[in-house]
Image 1: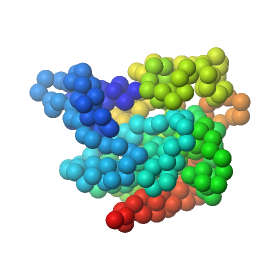
Image 2 (image 1 turned 180 degrees about the vertical axis):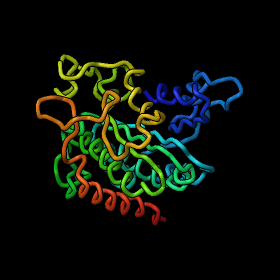
Image 3 (image 1 turned 90 degrees about the vertical axis):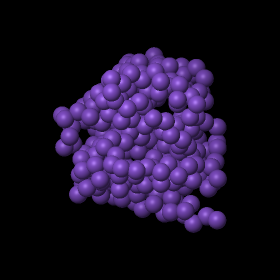
Image 4 (image 1 turned 180 degrees about the horizontal axis):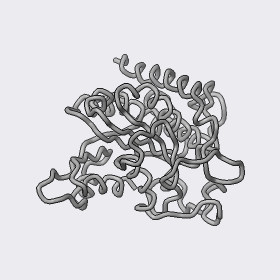
Amino acid sequence: MGVETAGAPAGAGAEVTLAVRDTRSGARVAKDIITPAGSQPVRVAALDLADQDSVAAFTARWTGPLHILVNNAGVMAPPETRTAEDWELQFATNHLGHFALSTGLHPALKEARGARVVAVSSVGHVNSDIDFDDIHFQRRAYDKWLAYGQSKTANILFAVEAAKRWAGDRIVVNALNPGRITDTNLSRYIGDISAAPSSFDPTSTDVSWKDTAQGAATSVLLAGSPLVAEVTGRYFEDCHVAPPYVPGVRRGVADYALDGDNAARLWRMSLDMVRGTRSRP
């Protein structure tokens, strides 16, 4: 889905950078993205969102304004895994990595004078609010689906708070649910996705399956369409602002994911966690 998302602005002549863990693979992908004659080729840069040192190095290297930042990377339902900071991997990657990246690039986004930040969340956010007392599953038993849901709720709360904090900098921030996407690496930890719990059941009639281009459509809309140039701090699905979540229907946005107090609290906690890594020897 990231390839499809990057291909749209690149095809329109934008200068695009793919931030990836595997730069060799990224370079192969970049060569396949078609750009207009005379435009810059798609660039590739190293970034591992689960490694705060990697994130800091990436943001330190960035120069010039940044008009669009799409936080698309993610991990879903791995076995219990912890980072060097003893953070739970899904929260560390899906939220804290993107949080550090976005805040680290804030000066470049501000310089653009009209930037957009797009946070790719999931309908899985309805599975879990943020457990502020045990975010990293240090006291409760690890549950990979609750951990995933919590990290996706964090993506939405990030958009809510960033939209508020950065409004004066003319930075628009929104989150989205891309839908259930076939044939992506996101399901690599669960094998046959039909074996996943009901929230990812392909026989469900609540949400239809999409290919990668369809899944990227809402990201592309939020990244570049003039139709949403003034919309910020919202959660989208299927290229529209999502309605409230109704239990039993895998659509919409949960109230807790748009809660301003939760968003501010998570921002403060995330900032403390990320700042703590900067003081390591």
